[in-house]
Amino acid sequence: MVASRSIRLIAPSGYCHNQDAAQRAVSRLEAAGHHLDNQSVIARRFQRFAGEDSERLNDINQLATLATLPDIVLAVRGGYGASRLLDQIDFVGLQRQLLNQPIALCGHSDFTAIQLALLAQTGLITFSGPMLAGNFGAEVLSEFTQSHFWQALSSPTVNIGWRSLSPDTGRWQGTLWGGNLAMICSLIGTPWMPQCDGGILVIEDVNEHPFRIERMLIQLQQSGILARQRAIVTGSFTSTSLSAYDNGFDFASVWQRIRDEYQIPVISDLAFGHDADTVTLPLGASATLQLDQGEAQLAFTGHPTLR
Image (cartoon, rainbow, N blue to C red; front, side, top):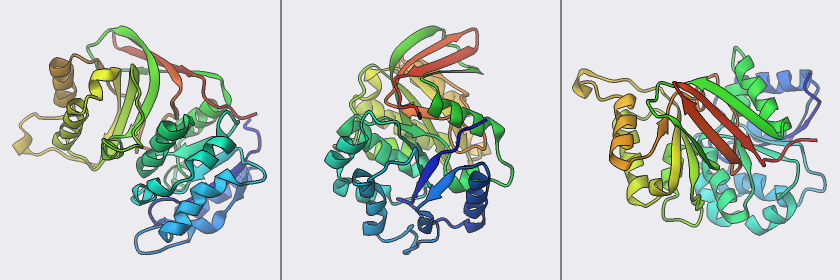
């Protein structure tokens, strides 16, 4: 049974167009005994965003001044908008208030930009995982996603196993980081990109064709970032379709080219990203990745855990 938690909602990105899903999530979480604060951000709207830039920025910067910290800070949804806020985030205040505290900042997709900026500027480890509307508010709630979420937030050491089609074999250790690939690439050349040498880079995306994913990985390579990684783990790449023009050029082709051209292991098929089933990963934690005869394991530790 999951202990009752205080959850503070934030909406730093797009307007929550599925209000029914968000309210369904609120009802579910409250029925499970959790307290949800700051619910007014769900309906807030300006243009395509979940409020004016100043309002969405305030969602983040307020965390530096709260008298009592929540257990969980949960993004309502992704979309677009986080990038507009990065140069005004109070990183000094957030580091002073949140670093080494038992608090979990959770979200994915567009929220990746804020998560990686926090890692780069403050060393704060946050969780790439489910969000309010799309995950907790799904018509059918994923037990897989729920169980991995609560395990990651409450266990000091977590081990995730899955079956991978990758041909690689080995054991790699490093800093676990990544998230949405498009958002990672948007940070190249900025102060918000973490310098993760010897990292284990986990990537996912949605609505991106294999050629676009390969182009982004080439950009990471040409920027010198891939060369500093020990391994890449690929999650889900959803809502895209191939055509006859592709002539067999698929995601597996992309992963193999990365292996061949850049001599870096690519471990595929982790349930992570925009699918209904997704694991929760702490960005900035210490991790060990293993693959032997198609059996992959990812263990991580050093992340904040809820009391």
